[in-house]
Amino acid sequence: MNLIIPKKAEEILQKLNDKNFDAYIVGGCVRDCLLKRVPQDWDITTSAEPYQVKKIFNKTYDTGLQHGTITVCWKGEHYEVTTYRIDKGYDDCRHPNEVIFTKNLKEDLQRRDFTINAMAYHPNEGIKDYFLGQEDLNQKIIRGVGNPEERFQEDALRMLRALRFSVQLGFEIEKNTYEALRQQKNLIQKISVERIHDELEKILLSQYLEKINKIWESGLLNELSPLLSEQMKIYGENVINQLKKAPFNRIIRWTIFLQYMTAKQGEEFLKYLKFDNDTIKKVTILLKNLKCDIALEEYALRKKANEINIEQLQNLLLIQEIQQNKNIEILKKYFYKILQRGDCITLKTLAVTGEDLIKQGMKKGKEVGNMLSFLLDIVHRNPEKNKKEILIDIVKQKLK
Ligand code: ATP
Ligand code: MG
Image 1: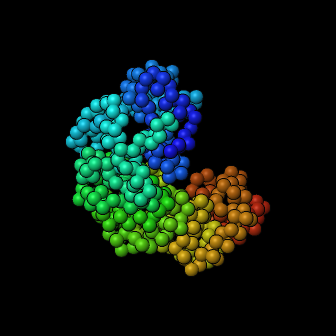
Image 2: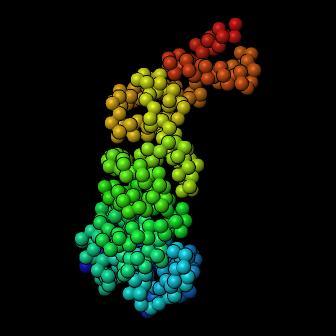
Image 3: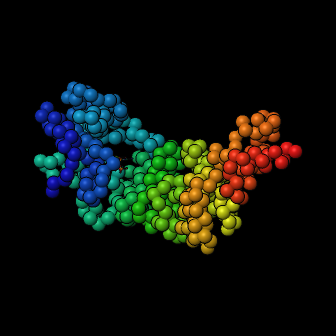
């Protein structure tokens, strides 16, 4: 079978072959080509050792030298070229104690996590598939290479990867692989939260969310957040339905996933997963506002838009629409009108500034700040009053 691979990747294989080294494209990109999905990246595996790879290509970076990985920059594109290797001993459930280079492709494929990720391809040789990855692809199965129990003990992140591929591709996790996952779920505690965070986010941004229930049914989620796990056992179906309707937007999807938590609980969970402050802020604001009903009037919407910002209000209305809030159509109509007219929402577009107030004899600081808020509220109530003369008149009246 011929796969369509980038010309530049093929040239890298050829250059390695010219020096009598074996080289294949490997892993996720072979899987994705076979599934007619667009690969994220093109990885190359080779019998050449890193120093030999570096001799062949002018421009390289030592990205993961200790694991045999060199990034080759070829005609402006970057490719990861990794020496065939065997990973030995994993005492910490995360990293191999030792990496040994080998000349044997099969041994390299054997260290990979799942059969569908353990295939290599060369345009002259076709697909190298020692572990029946193609069969599992056709059957839509995620199956560990070799003994799944051992494979999860070596690197516990693979459990979350199994679930991620299942949700990304719409595949089932093979029975023994799933059983091993259920048995060893507690090992996930050994994995750094950053890696867990990345996998969870990929899961939430996946297409086949009907498969996400395994993350709590297996007990894995309970290891990360007993509270969230309990909530999903009760409300999971509802959450799945909502996630399936949501756009591929991380803030919206995280908010839907955490919707049964209070804003404080959501914040704690995201902090534990080492999310950036911006994401934490956005999700917690949405969590806080999800349960609050916005009054059915334009004023309330303008006020809310100022409070949480326009983009966040847009997200909030989108989630409420997914949740089939009974008033959503009216709120959407009002919001649309507000945007269309370009009503003043924040102090930035208020027709008077602090400077203008100072010219009227007001004191810099709190006094001016309070007056601006007062004027903004007037404008939120009556957008047509956002004119300098009108607002200055109001100020003059007040100062009398
Ligand atoms: P994607 O890039 O779409 O997230 P991928 O399968 O390409 O998925 P990568 O993390 O890019 O995943 O890894 C590339 C390949 O390296 C995998 O296909 C697999 O063969 C191997 N691999 C990655 N992580 C592991 C792991 N934790 N254990 C064993 N093999 C792994
Ligand atoms: Mg990849």
